[in-house]
Amino acid sequence: MNYCKTVGRDKDIGSRKPCYEYWYDVTIGNPDYHMFFQLYHQKVLRIGIYVYRPEDFARLESKKAEIEALYGAPFEWYTSRKKSVAKRILHSIDADVHNPELYTQHFDWLIAHFDKLRNALETADKK
Image 1 (tube, rainbow, N blue to C red):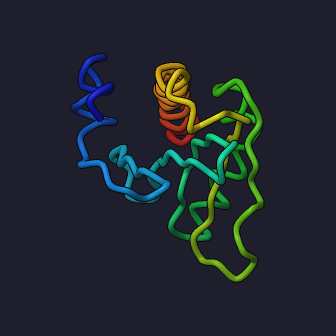
Image 2 (cartoon, rainbow, N blue to C red; image 1 turned 90 degrees about the vertical axis):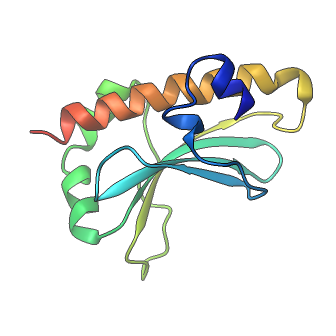
Image 3 (tube, one colour; image 1 turned 45 degrees about the vertical axis):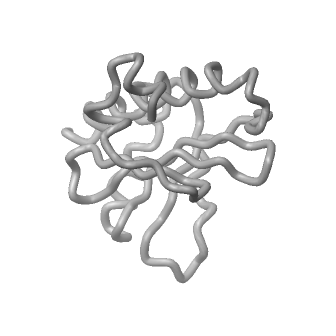
């Protein structure tokens, strides 16, 4: 979160206290979902949307093409367990997440994609 502070993002992305989990949730003012960052295993960096209810997921899914076009990349839409009420929508990249020399690059990627995703959701989900 220190990096977020140095780049002026301590009011949104860096507003929560960091923890020792492999994910970090970020609320974006929408009661239907929140965004998150995740280090998955040792070689995957992720940004995603955690959607609380099936009807909200269906609404976003109906706008899939628009959201992905606005975001600039495809998402993994169907990775959640079949019986799970909440659903995850993911964008993952291969990354050496434990290499300190790459931390700044990874933080910059997460921040840039957070902005793209939040803007895509705000634009597409208002319609």
